[in-house]
Length: 231
Image (cartoon, rainbow, N blue to C red):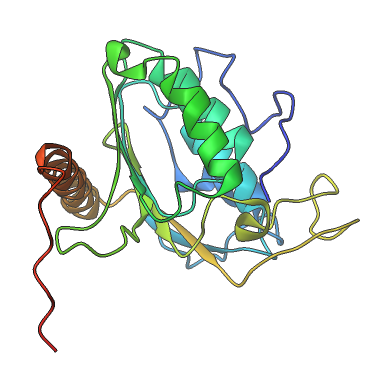
């Protein structure tokens, strides 16, 4: 089930161009934890958040809405209308370079299919944004769930972008409420430069692999047959 579209909130800075990730600090996100603070010995460049305990939906909004330079994203389950709205606002900004990789097997689900049809109709490629919906280099699902934003902030974990995947808070500031659902998922946010560099490189490689497979499929003759699998 997709998240319902919401008005701009304190975590969503899409309407404020003065907000960016240039001075981002992990401490900016501590208010979205259940405790509203980190432990005194918490890491300065890595923090793990928990769906159903921490406000993962607002954490994602906080980071993504402040992108101003680049976004490299691979997401298995892309089913959140509000996050998609943020992504598309950035996609239509010619100053932001974006590579977005989505999984082929998930793209046919009703909500994701509708989101993507609306997104592609806006021709985001004309604004320096590149989408590919495909598979891994070995024709498996593209299961990565993460991003690198502005070359400064990374995110990765088991969290798919959906209401239950993120445990989207129904009652502002607290988990629970009518129809509240939350999977057992984690979401890390990190700023370690080496991890950022290596993950961004991996996201680019995954995007190129999916695009290459997509192009090969598109140029394959309609009469061609797949060789039988060896058992």
